[in-house]
Image (cartoon, helix red, strand yellow):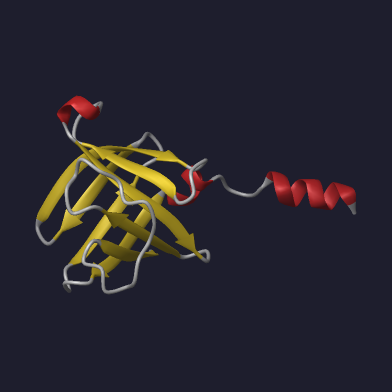
Length: 121
């Protein structure tokens, strides 16, 4: 029994590994978007025909988690600071501030224009 528990606990995915893959959703303004997180720390942000290549960083020690998207290799090229949380196994909720310089402290009502719920594809 202990061996089975150790095996199950050892196989649980880290929050970073749970992000890897394709996520799709529609924001509160009705705009559809896709985020593809790659293992190497790169990501594609897709809205319509526009694709933006970024790098990403997740601090899962924070509650809610801190997710940052970088236009270059670091903050000097621009950063979008967000908070993130998983909703079950197949949904991811993101929230950003109205300005890109600050990070929201927590999640608010679903009517907030700066929130997005994505589903794993």
